[in-house]
Structures are given as structure tokens and as C-alpha cells.
Length: 174
Length: 178
Image 1 (cartoon, rainbow over the protein chains, first blue to last red):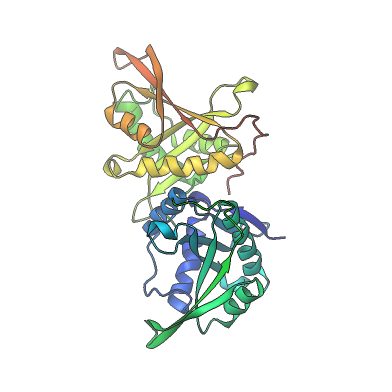
Image 2: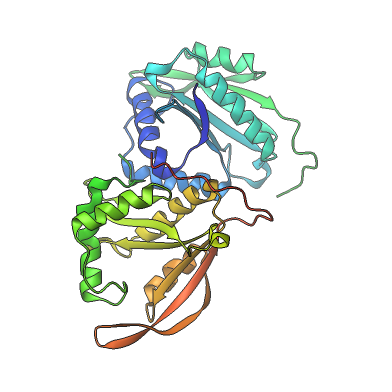
């Protein structure tokens, strides 16, 4: 049975980088052109650590990372503090087995545990599987930014989906 | 590959090459004779049975720094406390490598259940003190003339970094090394 784990740089940076870079060079799931260098993972984890952003992983029995999910700031201004934008990646050989659902479900729980209020996903309009997953977990479509990106010689439409969480019980300006 | 990963026994040669000059040429380590590669391999293997040992890689993928934890003292009530040490290859110092290693180490120690980390620094060593305080260590005190090396007595300052503040500690988990 795949097991949920909190990812750490020492254990998971290499596997996360591999999964991310595969998505970058082969898909429109990430609006990035060039694979990221190994050195990018130190600052990536440092930002997660400094802001209390969870990095959840799913490992098989051998400890191989099947996928991961995390979130970061939606926008930098203070009043956006309770809103986060998330992402979920599953290693290409392990897709279609419900791993993304398990990761996103756990990430929603983590967001509530951290008193976040809104989760936002930016999903490429062609990514039907991701859009269906989000809808099934209670995410609503906010709208589509047409021609938001350009990759592989064509314009990409970006669909924003959101889910409002019951937390925090007592919102405050932070 | 990433800049920080869990050590492997095969890192022993690179680790020994970083550590041996520190033993031979400085009083930073209180070892008098540099350990062999085989001995470093043994230490890495032994440590990873229960505790984290992490390495930092340079742009070419070679080990240019490492950090590890060891039991603070053997008596059972000390079990939630660890001593920690970090060493960085001469050409990689002053670039934040040790700080990144320590933060990654803390990320491993907390979920295992460890609560306090201690670090001993042979005095004076301004850069090492600054490094440790930058990752949250606070000074505890000085063991005066605690060691004799290279023809002189040396003081060792001790610093402490709280990993987590828990009222009732939980059973420790072993690192498992993967």
C-alpha cells in the first residue's frame, strides 16, 4: 500500500526534481520550458520550510516516491495569506491509480490544519484528468485565462479551480 | 540527484577527504589521527542504522559537505538529545552549505522524535559560532581546557538548538536510511 509521507530535502529532493522535470519537458502541466537544475531544490525546500507549506509524498513499500503534492503563496500581498495555490504530480509510470486523489485529499486536510481558507489550482485546459479530479473533490471552476501561456508552439489556456475551506475559525489580518 | 541527499557508505572516501585535513591541521576536531576511509565507511553505516547522515553535493555531483547526528549521551534519559556535526570542503566554505545541511538535518530529526541538538565548538571559531547561531543554536557555556592538541589546551563552547518543544516525548523512530 502506498504510504503518505512528509517530504524532506535529503530524502526526496532528487525524486521530486525528476518528476517535475519530466512534466516540464513532456507536458503542459507546468508552464516552464527548461528542466530545473539540482541546485534549485535547496531554495525550493527552504521556501516551503520558511512558510510552513507542506510537501506531501506518496511512497511505495520500497520507499520510491510515486508522487507529491504541495502548495505555495497564491499572490504575495498580505491579504492573500489565507489563499494558497497547489500542485500535484504523479510519476508517469504510476498514473491512473488514484494516487493524485489520495495526495490532493491529504493536501486539503493539511491546508485546513494550517488554517488556510482557499485552495486554488491552475490547471492547463487540456488536462482533463486533473480537471475531473478537482471537480470530484469539490473544486469549482473560477474561470479560464485564455492564452495564459505559450509552449510547444501554441497558446495554452489556464483554468483556475478553487475550493473554499471552513478554516480558519477566526480569520485575522496577518 | 540533488544538492542534499542521505549519505551512502560509498561516500566514505569523499567524506574522509574533507575530514582528514581538519583532523591533521586544526583543533576543530579533537581526533588526533585522521580516520581511514574504511573507518569513515564504518561510521556512516553505523550512524545510518538509527540516525541521519546527510551529504551536500557540488555542481558536479561530488560531496562537498556533510552533517550527522549522534547520541548526546548514553544514559537512557538523554535519548531525545543528539550531538550534531557538520564539515564542509575547503573550497565550498562561506557559501551556506553547512547551514543548508543543518536545516535538512533538523527536518529529519524532528519526525524521528528528537527534541534537543547540541554542538561543541573549539574556541575561538567565529565563523562556526556565526553559522550555528544562524540556524538557531544558542550558547550554553564553555568547557575550559577540555582537550589538548597541537601543543596547547583548548576550550570547547557548547551550543544548543531546540528541535521541538514537547511535554511528553514519544518513542524514538529509527532513521532507516532510505
